[in-house]
Image (tube, rainbow, N blue to C red):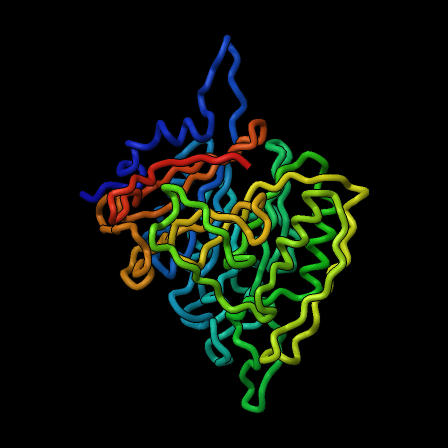
Length: 371
């Protein structure tokens, strides 16, 4: 009989406990547990891996929430109703947060296979508002305050192209084009302004905020390269610019112009003043999309760490560019990551659930870094 994801990963359970600081006593006092997330990305309609993710999340004490970093669809928005994803999430005893990916949007201009931002909300987020503990949510981006852990999670949607149609009724702009809009940028600024002093902020989105600076480490794929979806605003580091001003408690006043070939998109502007709030603490960006392990920093800000995650789906196409071998029925069937945030020591601990040995025999069972 096939082993479950829980049985296949018994060998790393003590490492997960260490990462989360579970059961750690000293002088009769239990140390505080770290904030724990189970990270999934680019499941690409791999039903079994989604079910496995929920099973492990339900099983493992100390992991507080799950997050899916986008690309739930195999190809395009209209290929199914996503009810399989909704049903699995609703079977989770813990909250799972959803990020919109380019394939979730449709990743094309064809209106029969792509969806508007409103349709994306109705398909992926509206059915899960109560489950996420966000009953008033009405956008595809949101923030969650984990007060007990001193952590704030901000989820962005970087596929906010306007619903402009051509003469055939198709979208003028590719729905998978990396593009934020003015309303979301304004929301991000205002959200960061009211983050309680001392909270540690994580930002999740599907694609890179900008081209990364390489950070060589065992957790970075040797042949990583840069795979960044084209931004409508070119080499646009608008989010890192905002985060930099927030980290330093300074101001940012800047305009961002679209590339000439995307003429018609509006100029984005940021007029942010964080001086009254003071400095902020940034943990990391959580990114999917590239289908590969990587740790780097956001250009040009070396104090803004970027983490990318490989496919949780196990199909051959999704893993064509990954250096992690996958094999169904074995430990390598799954590819999830436990991410724990130790706010006291400003440290991130990561443990791989599933595929952990690369094609060049590098072990990615666990790693940690400071922020």
